[in-house]
Image 1 (tube, helix red, strand yellow):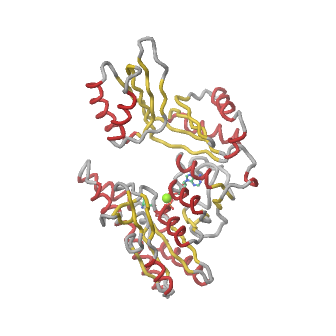
Image 2 (cartoon, helix red, strand yellow):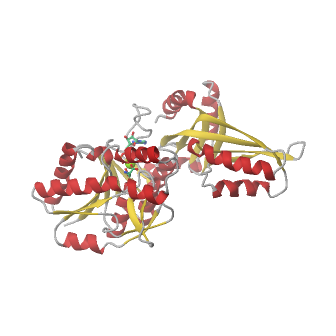
Length: 402
Ligand code: ADP
Ligand code: ASP
Ligand code: MG
């Protein structure tokens, strides 16, 4: 008899009928002889609705209260799913993050899981119950409820599987990982397997099908991970350690991140502590910086720095820049929005050169302009105008066989 962790996301539990379908799938698995721990997200768009409600009350609500609020979505789902399982004749128990022993650390709304104290889960499994755990939430050492960042139920599921040393199955509204988000490019190819590292990179670069941290944990603890359709009818994608058999092409996938803001700061006197000061101030305001580039010193011994961030940080940047104008003489800045980051990802890039050149040529041939480029060992990212997004995705997908 085995043990498995299954996770069902918001769209899979969006209404009572869907909860019934999920319950039936869990029971099927239980009947096959496996013990099952189920992690669920909030129903449908509940988390978004709660966030919107908070914004009606305050433009800057205390983050502690935000976590208390948005952690309630998952509580509805665990109770309803447990009721449904009991209704169908199987003993189940719902556990909040705290009851499941999810210990968190870090800030409200973006905490990390520090530990899973799994005794309570194990106790209920020993009593032959199906254990239903609220994803996305935990409790920190100050006994405060915290959440794990959007999409965090994936992380709850993988962390619990890592602790219980069992496989983790993520069920969602797509039948696996595709080379490109099928909503963005319907002809994308389904991948039968992908390495932890490529999946991590794809997730970090915008593929929201998996929360990046969940893949990081899976890789660290070698958790067998599959992603599949919530009806279970189609074979899903296996995410696992890289092996040579996977290495067929240089590029495995493409991800896109919307709402990119490009900030350029001009006239920064060169050779002083200015760059450090600028980024320290931005960090103090929790601005999440992505790509950074700095020009060589110009004729007047100043430099220009550009960086990208999310559009949501525009207000914080304005505040920082207003302060900096007082302390650094002559600097000014401009921002450009309506930008998208398009990234190509593949393990094969490690030992194949010319991928960037290839893409540059495709951009030139198709009149696509880019504003910034960065590379990692297994990805290249381009900032483009959002108007060119669909065209860019199509051009790259066709040329790279994605
Ligand atoms: P859940 O609510 O189950 O957690 P999400 O909405 O978070 O589901 O993730 C599933 C969605 O991820 C899919 O509907 C799909 O549009 C999107 N997605 C983004 N990139 C990919 C990809 N490369 N492969 C598959 N799905 C992707
Ligand atoms: N309900 C949370 C969210 O919408 C967590 C999750 O869905 O994984 O972000
Ligand atoms: Mg998700």
